[in-house]
Length: 353
Ligand SMILES: Nc1nc2c(ncn2[C@@H]2O[C@H](COP(=O)(O)OP(=O)(O)OP(=O)(O)O)[C@@H](O)[C@H]2O)c(=O)[nH]1
Ligand SMILES: [Mg+2]
Ligand SMILES: [Zn+2]
Image (spheres, rainbow, N blue to C red):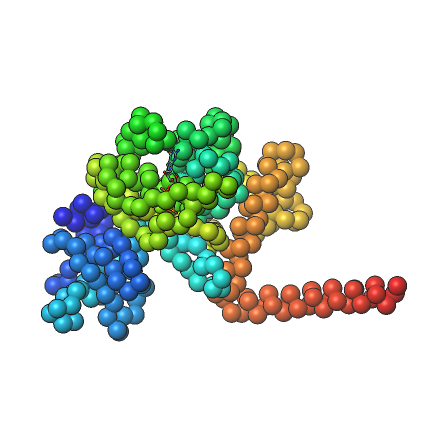
């Protein structure tokens, strides 16, 4: 049944108004392997492919798609279109310039997973939180491996200090009660995407909540607790309670893609002060009349958090620039002038010596 995969009134209305052919079948992408998509239809799972003339956005795990059989009778189905995403979480693809990499689609909740066998990393959490708030879903933090934590209370306090207003769960697979507590969140039709570094315990947690070995798990390196990138594809797993858990590969690098709403959600204390800055487009950098910098000097705003905010904003702005050729050209020209000035000063210094 499609409802087992999260189908609801929203999707029904979207399909009805979306101009799909009356005979179109709809299904959810539950996994992907290069050019093959696992699609869950009302009638069961099929393998979907993209027909040659496909011109829309490419489907990812979590997407709802319309399909038709064929092209030939022996073939699986062809994907025609992707229904407009209700939420999607992206990052800037590493090493490929300005490419959006969609990490998860149509999830209601993002579980940002961190293993307590290593100390929480506040700056990395802010990065994940920014992308998660930006996605349109609700982020929550799941601290796993509580049995390996040197000091649970200290770790939770460190996380809560940067995850303002975000629910923090603590779980250990060694303690059944902690897993049961998480189970209360597995409401029918709800999609939860698990994201975090390799070895954090994402697949282990999914297996524990499913009471089954659905996803492979791997050891972490003894020296630095890093995982071995065991999970290599995004996959949706229906679990008891009726929710869908999306397993994802551990991320090596997380460059943010867009940051607007994400920064507001992640840094509410900075956003609240921004209205009092003299300039509407204040970057909270060195502008006169900046309420944020004033608060930082008074100790009301954490200096490291403000630095993190600026860094993420700059990363997002950089991407904006690259997708806008005129803005990019202006930025390049400015950079060249700055470099020339610098060279001039260096030359001047050298000549003067
Ligand atoms: N002690 C302890 N070990 C755990 C717990 N949860 C997971 N682990 C271990 O952590 C290691 C990594 O677990 P995985 O579930 O493969 O981690 P992952 O986040 O899916 O990693 P990738 O698929 O590589 O991204 C395995 O050796 C697990 O047995 C826990 O609660 N306690
Ligand atoms: Mg995994
Ligand atoms: Zn300001």
